[in-house]
Length: 416
Image (cartoon, rainbow, N blue to C red; front, side, top):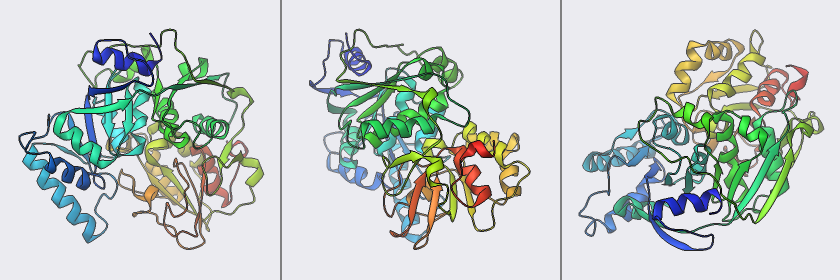
């Protein structure tokens, strides 16, 4: 009996597992993307003789092209060509339809009780569906491709309980900023973060993805939410696999953090740290050159809907450019059907191919020296989106849309 993490590892190993214990366990899925796959492939090839030269299971091995898609440079195109060659050799299907952390769940590759490793730090996003998912270095992922196993020191767990109702103009992203402010950017180092509370239980799967995605911004090894009827409904039609509905049983938490969301207001993370959090109204004087709506944190359909409802029939401020990148092809097509993309384009925004592009400063919205951006990303490190003298602020989709209209950071409550 224990935390959700302990329950998942105990279920997989068929025995009681406790925090602090080091275990080797079979993983359900292994994932890498276009910028982390090359090193993973190198590590795999060094183990190829032991594994017969084949990945452990091509149907449970996933390569996603999302970071530089379409290829923006000759180097990126060459890298992707070489990965395609490896994928063909191993009978691995390359997914090229959006951000890995959106596509993997959409494809039904994530279910409750799974243990998933990915060569990207935001693999923790999958915990929104009740899985233990964590990012690892490419070498570890190469080993997992070869063996289908990985080792873990079962982490202790911090419980973040979110209660109350979201006030007008406040969204899941604002709550995550409060979490990071309270816990700190390294306050959960190698801990699992378990989100609970009546507000968490009422949230959509999309909002839960936002919570778990930001676990790594507190140093978390994983972020998890206990699966429930909302989880099952979201997975309906996406997978036909049976899965356990595991839940914590008499958990022993290292720490419990209480958040009453009804006391929050729109929040913003200021350059250059995610925990440099203040209410939006305190920085409304800051002029913004570019706003960006997208990423694995807030590029889903409901995020686009929030922004589209603010921008409908309006025009983006002339000194500010707006970039919109849906998180996946599925999101893109549904946003197009519902007219959201048309609203963005008519307002003056650029709509890009589903992927990561601007978030990592590769293409589709790189910042020039001295520019300022407000984005729905999860990180605002120096140099993240381009020139190291550029500044990055983080906000909710509503704050981003409101700012696009005024040209300066704007409290969304003034335009909603």
